[in-house]
Image (tube, helix red, strand yellow):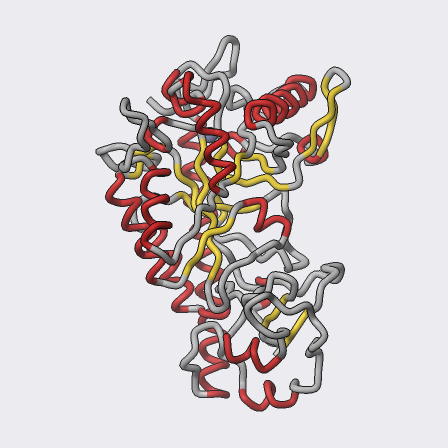
Length: 387
Ligand SMILES: [Zn+2]
C-alpha cells in the first residue's frame, strides 16, 4: 500500500524501494549498535576501573580531572540566561551537561488503529511522549538542531519528532472545528498542556500525490489553516518535495524545480515571512551532489536548505561536533520498541547522550568523550566549557 501511492506518471518503479531501505536501515542500525556497544563497553570498562562509576548519568567525568579544569576553559563572561547566572565549569559539571552527545530524531509517518512499520497508533504515540518526558527529554525542531539553537531546560536532553508525508492522522480537524485529540498534533498539544513538553516538532508535508489523504493532511479546505496554526504554535514546517520525488533518480532540472516550488508554495501558504530551511529527503535518496539541496535556482527563482534529514542511521550527532553534517541528519524510525531501545542504549552508554546546560549560547561537555562523537567543532562562535 505504502509503496504504490508515491508513483506518479512515468515515475520509475518504486515498489521495491521501501524494502531496500528497510534492509539498509537494518544494516545501519546493526552497525550502529555494534559500534555503540563496543564504544560503551570500552568506556564502561575504563570508567569502572579508574573511577568507580558515577551517580549522575551523563557525568562520569573523574573528580581529579574535573578539579584540575576549574581554572581551565571556563568562560565566566558568557552571556547569562534570563533565569540563571553565567555558565561555569562548576555548573556544567553539576548539571552533568554534555552538549556533544547524540540527539534522537524520530521519524513518524502514519497514525492509525493498526500498528505497522510506518503506522503508529495514537496510544503508542502517547506512550512515546510519556516515555520521553519521564526519561528527561524535551522537544526541539530540526531547524533548532541544525543551527545549534538548543534552548531547553538544564539537565534535559533534546529530542526531535519529525512527521513525513502529511497523512490526516498527523493533523485532523473534526467537523465541529476542534482538533482531533487522537491525531498526532492533538496528542502533542495535550502533552504541552500537561506540562514538561513544548509545541516543537518538524512536519514535512507533501503537496501533490495520488492519495488525497496525504496531501497537506487530507483536508484541502483546512490546509492553510493547519500550516499557519503549526507555525503559530511553535512547530516547524519543512519540505518533502512536491510529489515525494526521488532526488537520486530525478534529473537535476526536475529536482531543482521541486526543491524550489515546494519551498515557495509552503512559504506562500504560511505567509508572515516564514522561511523553510529544512528538507526531508524522500526515501533518503540523495542526489549525486549535496550542493543541489543546499541551494539552487529554477527558472530564475532561488531556493536554499540549511538542514536535511535522512530516513535512518540512528541518533544524530550533536550540531557542535566537527563530524555533524547538517544536510545528513540521521533519524530513527519510531516503530515497535525503537524509541525504548534508543533510550536504553543511552542508559547503557550515558556519555553518548546529549544533556543541556540550559544556556543555548554556550556549549558545555565533559573533557573526555567517546571518539565516535567527534571533537568540538572549531568554528562554533560561542563559548565552549569543558570539565
Ligand atoms: Zn516520505
